Length: 111
Length: 306
Image (cartoon, rainbow over all chains, first blue to last red; front, side, top):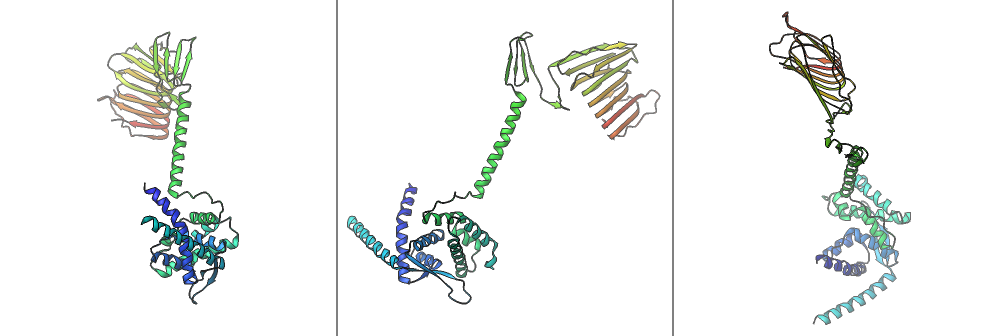
């Protein structure tokens, strides 16, 4: 049943992806969508553009991300940079705790 | 280059219209961000095509639906891919044609079964097959049509009339098909199929035999004309085929086609005329023994058969 593992992967990745995005934005201070995709891809976490942008849109709407349009140089085009809000940092901490606990439980169980 | 890329513009326009539930400012922000993404991707790989970047993003309607879903809004109906759309159109088109054909068949052959107890008759498929209990006869009607009238196998009749040298034969029909051949016996013979109705009887007076088929629409006849007879054949619509003629012929057809073929060694003096249409070139014999073949077609053609 290849379908069932795909379904499970989609579910587990969704929450995990949000955690990784918040983590990346925290470490990079501010980052734009295309850059984020490349960073995640470099870390072997493939994410579709069509999935990432709506996700960023929702997280910004929920108040976890702040955004600003910036143009890096004269010739460049404007890019939408995301950074963590206070709520975003708090959310990341909570997620981090939860995930850490999940990993510990997993390690304990697999021993 | 990309500023006015038509594919990008089309993509963004579809995306924009699919994001209708969002406020205008949100929509504009999303569009600008997606546009920025395409520029960034092109910057990273100048060899990349706009098409491939857009393909990686996914169908604009699907991307729009993801935005809507993430924000807890009701997504629009998933877009129908062009292949599926054409398959649906093709399927519906075929279905319509099948239904049309089925409708035609039903109309043509309805009622499917009709029982007439009084007459002791059963008609199947709109009268195509007729079973007559009284006469213990089964009739199958041909559906081949000509000039709007069906040649019916339901009613056949034939006859023969002995003739003397130089007797006249006068045949009339309104529409149908008449095939003529030469009879070595001194008899005028006919074998016909026509619609249901009375069987025409020949009228004989002063050495002239008249066969009037003009009441029989779509009649189909084979006539055998004795040698050296004087034939007069007149029809309104249809086709007349004369093979191996060896008699005097006066043929008139208002609309249709006449084919004429003289018997081997039978000389003819032709008088061929088509008012509207065309006629093959007929070469008349100068022999005094030549038969006269007068063929007149109002609209249609006259063919010389070799």
